[in-house]
Length: 124
Length: 488
Image (cartoon, rainbow over all chains, first blue to last red; front, side, top):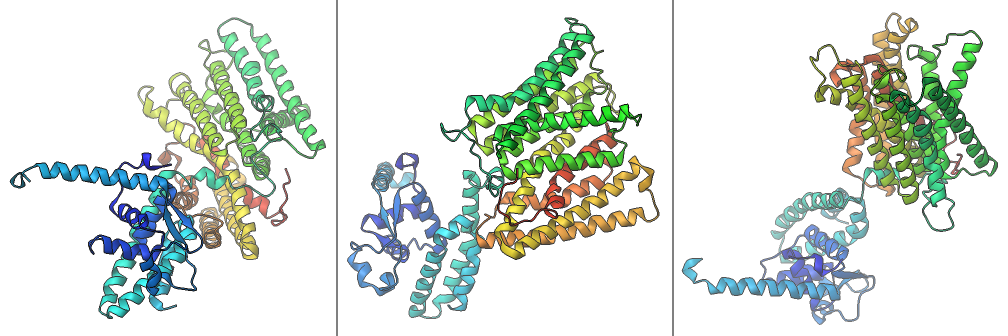
């Protein structure tokens, strides 16, 4: 399983990969990051988050790390709401396939945007 | 843990088992974090958060169940394929986890012999290639070869204290051999030569129980062996369709071709099942073989066998299908019943002491239920079963048995799900639907379920299927449950 089988990423999956591309995170940190990078437009419920994580894991686009990783983002480590010191949590990391899928999807979205921009506004 | 968190954790049970095991604890933690943060932002934010999170669970859980369904991860066959105590799907084969070609050939050999020694002579006679007496010689020769070879193989396994999986295919030969011996002995002793006719309720019951015992023991030791042993019986139940086509008198050769084709396909199915050693594949091969054989037998019976119902003006596909379906359902249960019985027993054993009691009580309910059905149907076979209050007793036994069966079976299933030994699936729901459905169908007028061609015979076969499903019920009451050993 790899990115070749994922032609189009769903929005939650796309944002999750985007979030993990900036560093390994546990579930709650991903939730916060997705809200932040989407400008508050995408607010995932816990159920949606883990449904998407499950599919990404199955597709080998991300992996699960049993121990909190040293390379957690600074913001994550500084925010007690995200890191919970003394409460080990499973963190998630993006894989090489995940990065490729993210890149592919980003390129696809860019191409769509470029195409849309070529049409005069009144034509939309 | 706060009340909202407890509610959330409870709702997480809606997810499929595998998903819960992977993520439930994490999800509960994330939910708590989210609530903590919302609380810091002000209590007004909480109702909206609860609404969003609680509502998301059933929706997301449904999506996960669908994903499981689409991926076929929890197929009925795989549910059944959980290994019974001491049993496994591997054979004694040092070369890998599939049977060798020789072993697979031996598994398909009895069916091949039936095709060549029973089907082929009949066909050759119909085509006027050989005279009838030569065909009869082949028939007797086939019975002797099949029966004695089967006995030899099983005896070899008994001496070695382990029967290889392929030997299950020979159980049919032994069973038929024993039946023929009983008939011959009855004739020699001057008893009724029709000793095994379907109107002899007691004998029929004894045959059913004996058959159930063999198939159940086979399935309990090894699921694949259970299928291999069931396949020949699933083929012979189509024989009523050939009754109006006397084997040695039909010029078209329908009977010979039916025997030859059915048993050749069965031989290939048995060979492939053993080569692949895959329960799911074997299950569908078994059903597929029976389906093909059944369609041809139904076609022969309706179009050429004088079995068209009086209500039908001409032979037609609808009549063929109506004749085919109920018998096919019966055939399916002959394969699935013993597997299910073995599975229920295993679930009971896995659920500790209460589980052991519940599966016994559940199966006791099944036995009570089927007893009521037998009494009801028995009146048509024997006047012994016609007595005052028969109808009331039938309803009482069937209703009470059904309630007992369903109640304890449900408790057993829920316990197994909670322990994580069973995954909830839509197929499990189908199973629950089938339990009350089968006796319901049996108690209805057979014509309502399409069995109008050979009402009592068909009802008898459906009864066999029902009884097969409940074989475990009778046996579990006699066999200690938690011994954890294979006893094939």
